[in-house]
Each structure stands twice: as C-alpha cells, then as structure tokens.
Length: 190
Image 1: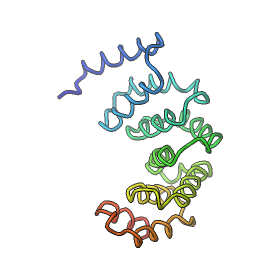
Image 2: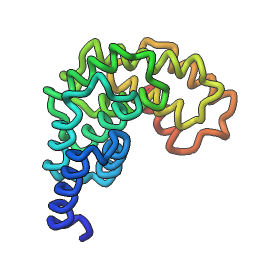
Image 3: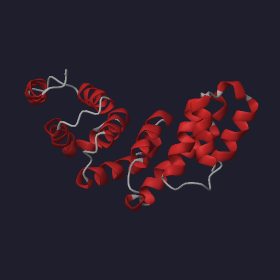
C-alpha cells in the first residue's frame, strides 16, 4: 500500500533534516503528526523524533501545537509517561490559554487511557472543559456538546453541570442532533 517501509524511511529522514535545519515549524510538524495519527500510522521512528524535538520545549509550545501533539500521540499509542506527564503539567499550568477545541482534543486523548492512569490533573483539565462548554453551550454545535460530555464522563467527571446543560440544549434544538450525537448523549447519561 501507500504506507510501505520506503515511504517512512524517506519521511523520517526528510523530517529530521527539516527539523534540524530549523525549516519545519512546530505547527507544521504537529500538523503532520495529526495527519499520521488520523491515519493510525504506527511508525515509531516518527513519534520518537517528535518526542525528542518537543520534550525539551514543552513550556514554549503554543496551546494549539500542544493539543495537536497530545491528541496525535495518544491516537497511535506512542505516548510514554515520561512525555505525557510533563505535557499534562504544562496544560494544567497554562489552562486558561486553551480553547474549547484544544481542551476537547486533549480530553479525547485522556479518555483513551486506562482509568487507573487518570489522576487529579486530568480531571482538572476535564473540569475546565465542562465549565467552558456549559458557559457557551448555546453557541456550540451539537457535536461539540456531545463530544465534550462524552470525554469528560470517560475521564470520570459526572458531577458537573454539563450533562444537564447538554440535555437542555437537546430539548431546545433537537433537530441539530444527528444519530451520532444522540448515541454519544445517551452513552454519557447511562
């Protein structure tokens, strides 16, 4: 197929060269990783390169790059705790810089973790997402509402205002909710 070994060998070498020469921005590199994550590409060399490049500079990364990076690494299961925990600390430290979209992506990554790996920092991030979504619910699309509800429930947050807020929005505009949103809503409330 398209994703055969020769492609990855060249991709890793070209990426290394661009990163080393300062010709690839954080945003472009994170965007590439996001695409690979969506494609479920498990080429470890690429993910190790990403961790080596970003780990020393976690504090300097923009919220957008951090969110893309955390989501991508979780998607392909190359998210070692030696990187995950410092990344999480940075997110908590700079929590107010992150938008609903950033927090949803980050919490989606958390939701894929084993529940035994979740801690108070994960729940702090989830609680911030639940609060923001509750505050801005009437301006959000149905998929944003149900996705936020689903990921916060999956990381163990069930005592927020969010479930009632999403139900209220569903009753207010039921035709906005498609089958996928309804499925997520019901799963979250079960």
